[in-house]
Image (cartoon, rainbow, N blue to C red; front, side, top):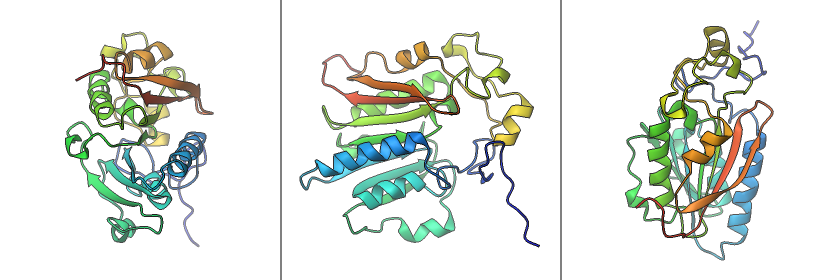
Length: 244
C-alpha cells in the first residue's frame, strides 16, 4: 500500500524546500495572494506593447512554481531560493517559452544577491511567505535594493508577510518588542507541523508601513489572507526622496 503524503494542519503536503523554512506550498495550489499577483502580471503583459517584461521571485521554493507561471506568461524571471532547484525543473531553466518568457534559477541567500546587473528594468517583484524569515533590518535593506531595480513609475512588488496575530501568532513571544528587535521562533507545537522552525520577524500593520517608508514609491494595497498574513502591494513612483 502506498504511503500517504504527510500533510500540515491546513491540508498541504509537507514538501520542505529547506529545513526550517516551511513547505513548498506554491506548487500545490494557488493562494489568494498568487491569484491577485498573477492577475496583475497578466495586465502588465497585456499592456506591454511588445516590450520585454522582467520579474524577480524571492524565496521561490525548489519547484519555483510562481516563477514558472510568470515565465509562461512572457516574463523573464529570476527565481531566488536557498534550496537547490528540483531535478524536474532543471530542463526548464533558461528555456524560452512560446510567449517569449524564460526563467533563471539562483540558488543562494537573498540577502547576499546583487541586483545591480538587472539595470532598473524590473516590472514585478514577488515574494510569497518570505520577508518574515529575515530580520527587519535585513528585509529593509532588501526592499531598498529591489526598489532601485523597479522600472520607473511602472514596477511593482507584491509580498505576503507573516503577522503577529496570524493563525500561529499566538505562539510568538516577541510580539511586544519593537519590530527592529523582533526575532524569535514559533512555539514548537506551532512551528513544527508547518515546517517552520527558524526564527521569524512577524509584523503588525504599523511595521509594514515602516518597512516601506521613505522609498521611491507607495503601498497601494494592504489586506489579509485566510491564514492572517499581510498581502502587500507596492508601486514605484518617482518622488525624488527614495533610497539612493
